[in-house]
Amino acid sequence: MKKFIIITTINEKTRAVCEFERRPGWHTIVVGDRKSKPIRNSESLTFLSLDDQRKLGFHLTENLPLNHYTRKNIGYLYAIREGADVIYDTDDDNVPNPDWKTEGFTCENSLQCHDIWINVYRYFTRDYIWPRGFPLDQINQDQALTVEKTLPVKIGVWQGLVDNDPDVDAIYRLILNKPVKFDRRKAIALPVNSFCPFNSQNTLWSKEAFPLLYLPATTSFRFTDILRGLIAQKLLWVSGMHLGFHQATVSQNRSHHDLMNDFREEVECYLNTTTIVDVLQGIDFPGNALENLCLAYQRLHAGRLVSADELLFLDAWRKDLEQVL
Image (tube, rainbow, N blue to C red; front, side, top):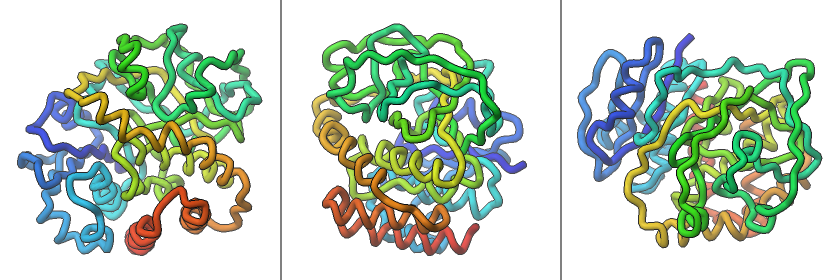
C-alpha cells in the first residue's frame, strides 16, 4: 500500500515535518510556495518547489494563486499520480503523538443524532468548544450524543482531533482561547444527513474519496477546507460512505496568527455554511464522485456562494484528475 502525507509550508523544516518524515511506510510531500524555504529531499520526503510544480505539467499548476493554502492541491495530484492508496492531510505545526496511527476505513460505532448539525467535539470533551465552520446559531443547542454499535459502515474520510490548540474559529480564540486535551474515546461514524465541519489538519482520505480532495481556490484561507468538507460529506453519503471522527493523534504547536485577520477571513464560515448545506441537500446527484463534485460547485455558483473563477479552477482539477487516476 502506498501512503502519502501532504503538507504545505512557508517555514523552514519544522519538528512536525521531521516527525512525519520518519514514519515508516509513509512518504511525505511538502508543497512549497513563493515564500517557502527549500527543504532537502530524502528517501521518504519530496519537496515540491514552484519550479518543480510547473514541471509536473498539471493544468491546475498555472491557475492556482500563489501564497495560498490551495497549492496543496498540487501535492494531492502528485501523490495520486505516484499511485497513492491513502492520503493523509496535515499542517506543518501538527506534531504526531508517540502513538500516532491511522484507522482502517470501516467503523461499527455510529453516533446517534437526528440534528442536521452535530458538534462532534462534545462527544470528545465536556469543555465548551466547537469546530471552525460550525454555525454560530447552533453553538448553544443541547445535543444528547449517544453511540450505538452497528453493522460496519464504510469510512471515506477520517477526521482526527488535535490536542492543545485544536481547530476552532477566531471567535473562540478571541473570547475563550483555552487549550484542550480531548478525551480518549472510540472512533465514531457520523449518520447520513448530519453535518459537522472538518478540516485539513489530521485527516485521512481513502482512495475512493480522492476526487473530493479539491480545495477551492477563490475562498479565504480560513474557509477553503471547511467548504471542501461540507461538500465532501454530502458526496460521501451519495457514494455509500461516511465521515468518521477519531480521538486526537497529533498536538498542535500553533504558529502566530493575527486573530482579527482570521476573523475577517472566517466571515464566509459564519454567514454561509447553513446556506451551503441547504443547497447541497437539495441536489439530486446522479453521477460519479468527480461529476457530482462539479455539479455541487455549479449549483453553489448559481446561488452566488462561489465565483465563476472557481468553476475554472475546478475544471482544471477535473482534467488533471482524469489523467492521473
